[in-house]
Image 1 (cartoon, rainbow, N blue to C red):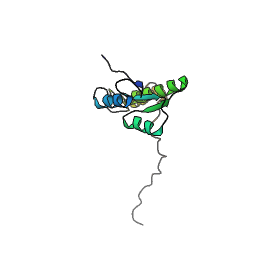
Image 2 (image 1 turned 180 degrees about the vertical axis):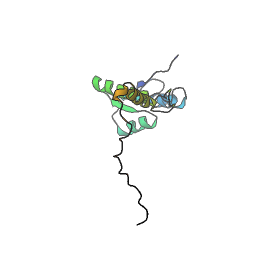
Image 3 (image 1 turned 90 degrees about the horizontal axis):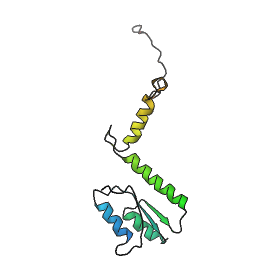
Image 4 (image 1 turned 120 degrees about the vertical axis):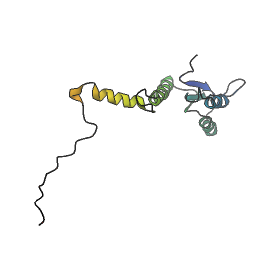
Length: 130
């Protein structure tokens, strides 16, 4: 039973409002990293602030454009994927590190140095005291 990758919910719901649900999601260590996007007909700044304070990552007002919704969902899922722990480093952002390593090592002939090489220094011989 796997938790969802993302929650998309309205603020106005029966029994419990979206703020309360979001707070419960964020309070549980099994679900606290799940991004929550609010969709609401409420277009008041204070309600938007309350949604972000509850742990929401985005707020979309109704009526909304479907293309905009899709882009916002994709963006949050991409952020989530980028933050996944890497099997190589065990650190957030590890998937980006692994992608860079793969890019640099996939074709040894095309590998580029991590840092540009400094210009060669002129070698001077010591000729003793002047």
